Every structure is written in structure tokens, then in C-alpha cells.
Image (cartoon, rainbow, N blue to C red; front, side, top):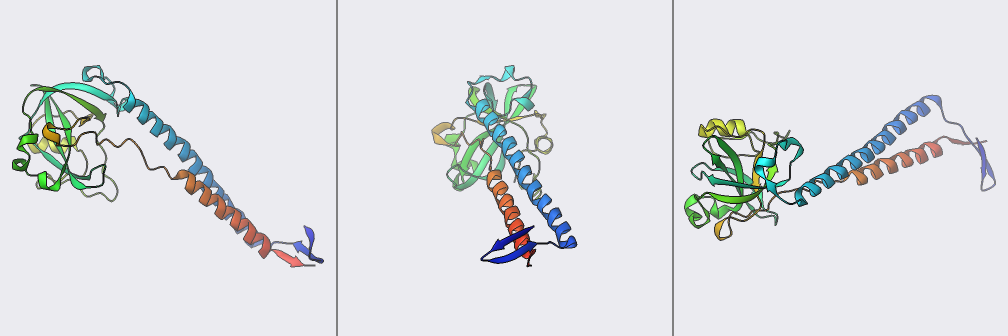
Length: 238
């Protein structure tokens, strides 16, 4: 390809080996950009599904027949919290304060126990004797959110049932710890605050980090920059 610039004639004449590497690199960069666009669409749809499920009117827990497809749906459930069994999960509140989620088995009947995340308490309320006014042993009706047990992350520590320090909900180990049969397929998160303001309910995170558009633009701009660098590196004076 010949062209003239500032009254001087140039020719675009890339060398074979650099051209091959250029095509490989460009293909990789554009593939990464398009992959991020695909991830963007997937993540956006997932967030919209979560919001739609979360904002629907609550239903009775007995009507939930497929929790895998009904996560984040609000339900009404009646039961009694077995407060002698408490699991502590370190977590930030929605306002960014340090504390713990307190997970307690909820006894629906003598044969059915469901793990129930009662909500978040600050560090100074971890000990039970510091929150006696926040504990109820009565059978009552709760509003809660269906959640699925999480998987251990790559960089996440193991749960420590001896020290009662939990990083994710693990029904099998929790069941073994308290020697009670627990629901394995899902657990519940409280929508409302506990007695006298604690634990703080409504801590469910339905939004996901969605930076895929920025990533897609970044890879695309790198690809454009590569094209420019390769073009100027491959022109010669005639």
C-alpha cells in the first residue's frame, strides 16, 4: 500500500514474522473484548433476574418447590429459633461496619430444621449475654429470603467449626457440628430486624460487581493501539 504524507512517499510493507505475531495478538485482544461483552450481557440478565425475584411479593415457604430456580425470592415462614446453636460468620454490614452474621437453626417442626441467617450484629454484640434483649425463643412468623449454600472461593479460608468461625454456609459441616438434621438445599436470610433492633435484617446482597463493559472497552482500545503501533512500525520510505 502506497501513500503520500508531507510530500513524501511511503509504503506499508510489513515483514512476515511480525505480521503473523500481530495477527495472533490482535485476534486474542478482540476475542477478549467480545468475550467481555458476552459476560456483560450474562451478568446484566442475572442481576435483573435477582431483582425481579427479590421484588416479588412474598409467598409461603411451603410453596417453594424448586429453590435452585427461586433464589432471592421472599417467603413467609413460621418456626422457632434454636438459639442455643449459633454460627458466626464475619461480615460487613451494608454500611461497611465490621461485625458478624448470626446463623441459627429454625425449627419448622420436629422433623424440619432450616438454617436461618438472623442478620448482622456489631462486634460488641457477638457474645450472647450482650444481646439478650435481641433474642426470641417464641415460635413466630418470619419474612425471609431464599438463599443457596455457597461454595468455597479460591482464596477463601476453610470454615472452622471448632472456633465457630464460618466464611460461607456449609450445611453438611454445620449439621455435623450440632448433631441435628438440617435442610441442605437452601437456607434463609432474615428480611426484618430482630427484637429491639438487632440483629439487623435485610442484609441480602442481590447486586453483583459488573465491570465487564470497562474490561471490553479496555481490550478493544489495546487492540486499536496495537494496530496503530504495527502500522507505523511497518511503513517505509519509497
